[in-house]
Image (cartoon, rainbow, N blue to C red):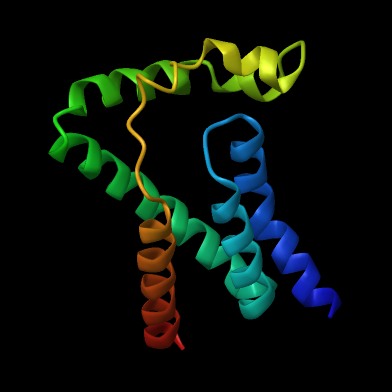
Length: 130
C-alpha cells in the first residue's frame, strides 16, 4: 500500500503543479495518480518520462497541424527562458506564472491522448526490455 501511494504521489505531483499554475487539467493529475498506484514506483519513473516526452511531441505536432506552430515555438522559447525564475523566484506561484502567455495565446490539446500513448509506449518498452 505504501509503494502504491508513493508512486501515485510521484506521478501526480507534476500535474498538480501544472493544474495549480492553470496550465493543465485536474483530470490529468488524477489519471497519472491512478496509473502510478497501479504500476508502482520503479515503472512510474519510466511512465512519467514517457508520458511527458509523448505530450511534448504530440503537443508540438498538434500546434503545427492547427496552424499555430510559430506561435507555439515562440511561447515555448519564452517559457524555457523563464524556467529558473518560475521555479524559484520571489512571490507566489500565481504571481510568477503571470509572465506566461495568456490562455488565449496557448494551444490547448487533450492531454489524455498523450497519457494513453505514453502508457502504451512504456508498456511496450518495458515488455521488450524485460
